[in-house]
Amino acid sequence: MRSPHEVIKHMLRTEKGSMMLAQNKYLFKVDSRANKIEVKNAVENIYKVEVDHVNMMTVRGKKKRVRIREGLTSSWKKAIVTLKPENRIEVT
Image (cartoon, rainbow, N blue to C red; front, side):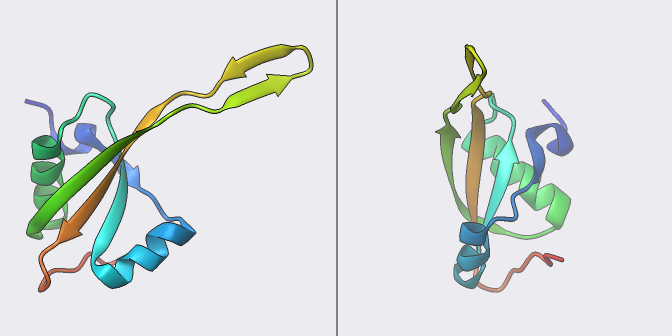
């Protein structure tokens, strides 16, 4: 079993993520091999909160071009974690 800090890479601070804070939802960049159960346990262990449910998606890499060469950025996995109403994570 992996440690919680291996599963969760970092919290995403985006404009969309800021709007989701009002709904008690938080965005995390997670390991591409992680599943919902691992993410739930990792968030509960790191932040000491109760998780209601987890939604996950794989963000595909974008096409990039430098002069003649074309390539792709890496794909990564994003988790949207909804906490129970009485819990909050302090975002600074």
